[in-house]
Image 1 (tube, rainbow, N blue to C red):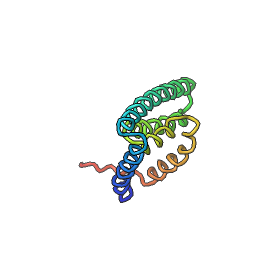
Image 2 (image 1 turned 60 degrees about the vertical axis):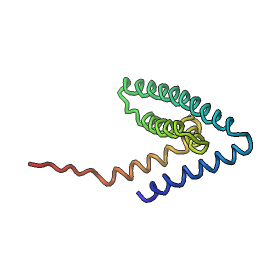
Image 3 (image 1 turned 135 degrees about the vertical axis):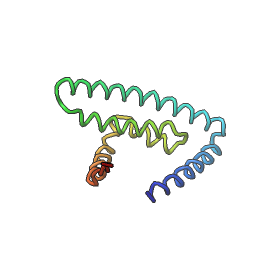
Image 4 (image 1 turned 180 degrees about the vertical axis):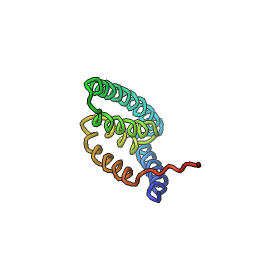
Length: 129
């Protein structure tokens, strides 16, 4: 939880620094235009790849197979979409890496390991009798 708090402080500070740096080179209006353009383009890419993944999952389920790889792709696309929707160059870069199929493979094993680590803890449900 401590790492999440530090990331929530560190990432916006880094984004502001990059905004100022890029704005000094190309101007503030170009920075705003690039942010809007990358956000819109990223959302379109995420929608396209998300629908493609959904169709592949439906095909696997219709054959009676578990869509495990498609679920991992869907998780990556969802996380990437959130990053693409957030304004910033760093978050847009991470979002594109997670949305594009050829670079998504780099993160799938890490996300799978994280999910397995979370699942090991188990779930306890308390019932009031």
